[in-house]
Image (tube, rainbow, N blue to C red; front, side):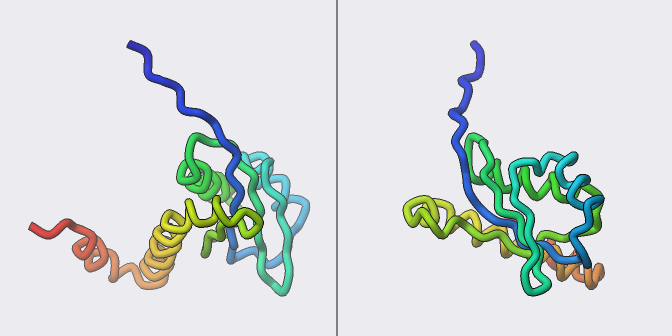
Length: 130
């Protein structure tokens, strides 16, 4: 029996990046080529933000896919925060739990990257209780 195809929906969210000193044409090209052609990239007050309108079965799929695309671009940027849509309160509420969970994971990832000796402790804490 063939697997049922999941409905594709447009999901709006933003990724906030760190590690990009300037938005050069090369950086923008690499993001585009890595799959971020559905994002508006901007820089304000030293903060780089990518506003996505991504089609995917779920908001989780859309956000995780966008984070992977940014990493695949090889521009040296880190995604430090995910922001849900502010223009659609119903959609924002629907993905608030996912965004909160992702932001917690991104914070843990940044801590481990800064201090790799934390990795074993974090992995132990993430194990389910016996």
